[in-house]
Amino acid sequence: MIKGLAITPPILGRISIGKMVEKNGKRVPEKDDQFTITSQIQNKEGWVKHPLDEQLRAKAQNQKLRSIPVRMIFNDPELNLRAEYSLFDRQTGRPVCIGNGETCQRLTNQGVEQHPCPSPDLCPLAQGGNCKPYGRLYVNLDESDEFGTFVFRTTGFNSIRTLAARLSYYHAASNGLLSCLPLQLTLRGKSTTQSYRTPVYYVDLTLHEGIHLQEAIQTAKEIDQKSKLSGFNQAALDQMARQGYGNAQFEVDGEEGEVIVDEFYVENSPQQEQKQVHDFKQVQDVQKGLQQSVSVVN
Image 1 (tube, rainbow, N blue to C red):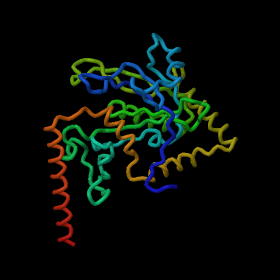
Image 2 (cartoon, rainbow, N blue to C red):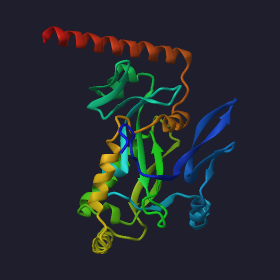
Image 3 (spheres, one colour):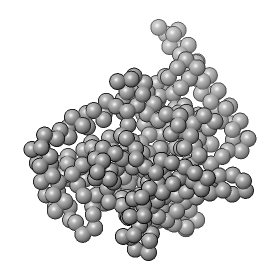
Image 4 (spheres, rainbow, N blue to C red):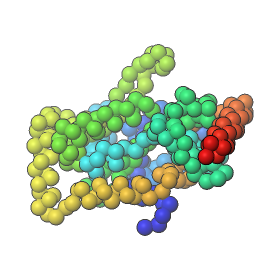
């Protein structure tokens, strides 16, 4: 396996709750009140819709796609949902700093270094909204390709927190049979003071409509037993995925970073950009001072 290359689940398409629109000559993100399933191909109008979008939309009420039946590929919740604090270079889309609230991997002039991660609110480098939680949920929609995934990307706390909770709860309740449960993505809305009472939409994960948890767990047991009899090794699959994620210091590459910056990061003013550079230099100065202090002590 090539070292330094993150091996992530094969992506067949994207799931989004927004789109890019042109305003005043600039492309800006616009939120939506429904899901859209796209391929990985773009044209002048944006991302080209995947055939599954039309198929699922035909079954939806009022043609609004607000629920999508999905299957998890892995039993380990953290293999299906990848989430961390992420700071990207706005020009290249390359990751600069990736952290989990405790430690982070940061790209410096000396290479990639490990530092404490105090979370964006307390980190000087993250000021100005440039460091955000960034989550990727990998789900299977196409039964003909059992390892192919559609990825839902988000920088929203509501979606990441809800998905993380649901995945861990279903994993625990089913005795680890997460990949065998009949699940669906569900779009929910809520209003907050920060949203000025307008709806904010986020993604939830629930059982298929009309299916109770006990029934879903029984079905999962039957699927698991049948899979094992056929020779399928779910534990080995999870372990291989774990190794693939850990094969690189940064899981996100520059190509994906460009998409993230384009869709989720509002353009800063020149003053904000200057402040970010100033804060970054301050962080480097502090780190250099700490390193010198350690050297003196040693």
